[in-house]
Length: 336
Image (cartoon, rainbow, N blue to C red; front, side):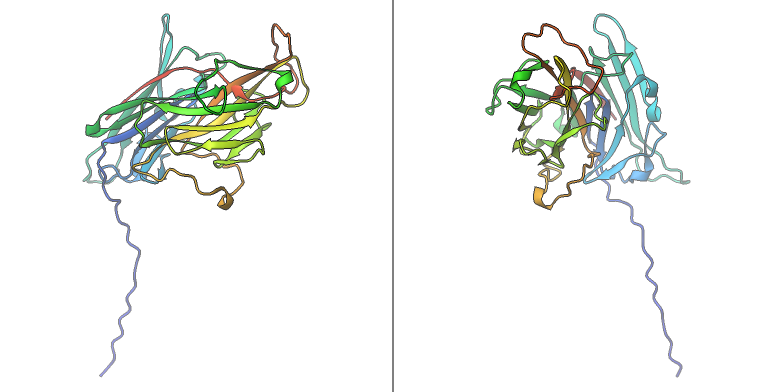
């Protein structure tokens, strides 16, 4: 009897993602970027089947969510991935940016319910058309949680008087040159959201210009760990407020007055859907890796010599300290 051999070849199978209810969305209106999070696999749609503005398939699959980012709100790029903008004049001029996350299946038959997350962010007051800079110390976060309702939060970065973090100082924050090296207390807080949402500080760094991408920088916090030996992180990712302190400093070439900007990359994490606590610092890489999940808040600090009645912006390298740049209140809207 002839032996019959059977060879089984196991081929990989592609399974569709497990469908999720599409009734949850979080939109963060940061000063110079808009970040929209939708549920992972809404009604069975995979990341490659969802696009921003029906144009860009640029979504990132993060734990529990698909994340879409509009990284540039400057006038030169108003139409990024189908983004539409509207200028509303009057006594309170505003810019409104619109876009949507839509499903798109090129196959002959479609078996999933189509989705369309339409959202907008409105920026008022401190938008300067010439310089293309929004007020940067505040962002607005919107959460729609289906039948549980919609929630709005103002995410802001402030300087506080001491380590109790009870009283915020008025902006702009001024430091006399004789006080260089004094402690500066920073708090980043989301107001208006429930305790399930945690504020997570990922990176903080200072630059001598308003631009967070400036290569001349001094890093304070990296991957949620203190990198400067004067930094103390009091709380991070535990509740709706995260706090830290560091000693003030300046860049080289002291002038009578200078301006320095402190930039912090932050995100609001849903503690009921994700594990928000950063991993221990000892087990993490020390390389600077911008977090695609977060947006950037910026503060301006003015450093001026004693008895100086006015200030200038020196042409050379800026004397530095932190920064607390403009800030502005944002509005937003989303629907589906």
